[in-house]
Amino acid sequence: MSFSRRQFIHLMGLAGAAGVLPGCSSGTDSTNGAAAVSSRKAPSDLYEIPKFGNVTLMHITDCHAQLNPVYFREPNVNLGLGGHYGKAPHLVGHKLLDHFGIKPNTIEAHAFTYLNFAEAAETYGKVGGFAHLSTLVKRIRAERGDGNSLLMDGGDTWQGSYTALQTRGMDMVGASNLLGVDIMTGHWEFTYRDHEVLKNLDAFNGEFVAQNIRVRDEAMFDYKFEDYAGFNDNTGHAFNPYTIKEVGGVRVAVIGQAFPYTPIANPQRFIPDWTFGIREREMQDMVDMVREKERPDAVVVISHNGMDVDLKMAANVTGIDAIFGGHTHDGMPAPSIVSNAGGKTLVTNAGSNGKFLGVMDLDVRGGKVQDFRYRLLPVFSNLIEADREMQSYVDEVRRPHLNVLSKELAVADELMYRRGNFNGTFDQLICDAQRAVGDAQISLSPGVRWGTTVLPGQAITMEHVYDMTGLTYPETYVTEMSGADIKMIFEDVADNIFHEDPYRQQGGDMVRVGGLDYVCDPTAAMGNRIQDMQLDDGTRIEANKTYKVAGWATVNDEAPGRPIWDIVAEYLRDEKVAKITKLNTPKLKNVDGNPGLADYIA
Image (cartoon, rainbow, N blue to C red; front, top):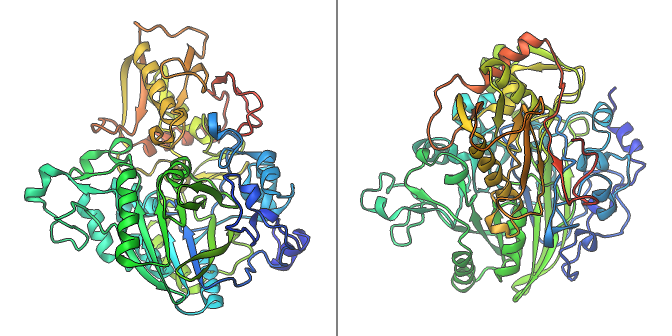
C-alpha cells in the first residue's frame, strides 16, 4: 500500500507529536526529555519548522552508508539501570511514547518505536535516503537564509554498505559533499586503514574535528602523516580539535569528540599511530581555552560518545551549550537538559541509518544562547521528493554493483531486524548460518547496532546481507573454546553494556549467540551477570570442557576463514525461506517492569 503526500498528512490528522515539535525552552531544568517538550499546536506539514532565533544547527549521525531509503526497526530492549532507569534514551515502545507525549498509532509513533512495525512500515514506507535527506536539508537552508545554518555529521558515515566497502568509504565522501556537510567527527571511519582515512578526509569538503585523538608518543618522532593539515606536533592532536564558524551573525565553536574506544572495539592495527579516549579533563580544558581565546557566542560538541556518556560529560564539563550525539543510535524526539556547575547543557541523539535529521534553532544574543527550539525529523521517503542531483549521484555509485546487490537469496518468513540489547532475528540468521556451515555447536556474532530491516515476505538480497556484515575485517573462524572462556567473553561484553559508570561502557549490544541459552542478570556485578549456560539440547556448559565455536569479526588478529557474507549467503541460498526456529535470547533477571524492556521473548 502506498500513499500520496497529501494522504499522509490526512493520516497524521494534521497534528504531530508534542515531543517532536518546537518549543523546548532552555529555561527548563531536567534530564527528562518530557519536561523539555512544548505543548504548542503542531503544523499541518510534518516538515514545517517555524523560523526561530538566528542560528540553525542540523545534525545527522550513524547513517552507516545507507544511500537509498531503507526500513529500520527501533529496539524493544534498551535497558536503563541505576540512575538511568526510566530516563532517555532507555525507553521503548509505549513508555517512550508516553514520556515524549507522542500519540500511539501515528506516523511519529512508527518513526520512534518498534510498535506494529511490519504493518506500519507497509503503510508509511521506507525512511532515509540521501536524495530525500538532501531535499529536506536544502529546504531548511533556504528557509533560514544564507549563512544562518550548519550541517554536522556525528560519524559512522563511511561504513555499512557494499558500495562503501568497495570504495573504501569514498562513495560516502562524495555524498556528504553533495549534501553539504560542514563538520564531522568519526568512529567506523577508522576501520579503514589510516592512509585511507586521510585520503578520504582530503576529498571531504567539510572539516573533521576530534579533540580526543592524539598521536602516540612513540610515533611522534617519525610520524608518517606529519604533513596532514590537522596534525599539531605541539599538542599531539592528530586532527583539528575544534573549528569556529560564523553563523547567523554570531561565532559558533564546534568541538569534536570521536568514539573514545575505537582501538578497543575495532582493530587498532588499522590505525596504529592514534590514541583515543574520553578525555574529560582535556574536554574541559578545550572548552575553557576556546571560550577565552576565540570568544564564541555559543559552544557545541559534535560527539560519537554514545548518549549515556554524553549525559555524564554534560554534567561534569561546564561551558558547553549543546552536545549533538551519536553512536548508540538513539532517536530521541527531544533533548535532555542537564544541569552542571556552569549552567545547563542540551544533549541530543539523532538515531541512525539516515532515518532522522535533527534541527536545533538557537536564539543567540549578548554573547550567549538565550533560548532554543528542537525537532528530530523522521525522513520518510514517500513524503519528501528526491533531490535530482543527489539521486543521480547515488544511482551512478550503485550502477556498477547492481548485479551483486540485487541477487535474491531467500524469502523472509518473518520480520528480519537487528537492534536490541540481546538479539535480533537477522542476528539469529547470521548465527544459524555460522553453525550450519561451520558444523559448530555454538556461534557468536558481534552486537553491532547498524543494519537494515527486511519485511515479512520480502526477498533477502545480497545487499541486505552486506548491510548486516559489511566490515573491513569480515573473516570467520571455527575453533575450540572452553566453557570458562565463553563465559568470560559474555561477562566482558555485558560489563561494557551495563556497567554503572557510563565512562566504562562502550556502546553496542550483547554478543549474539547461536546454539546456546543462558540467564542474564544485568543488575549484577562483573562476573555474576551470566548464569546457567546450556546448549540447545539442554546440556549444561561446563567450565573445563571445550566446545566447537564459530564466529567472525575478530579485533586483535585476522581470522583464517571465509568472509561472513559468503557464509550467510550460502546458508540462505540453501534454506530458500529464511525462518527462525529458535531465538537464543537469554532469560533476564531483576528487570521486570523496566521501561526499556517490552514484548521480550526468551
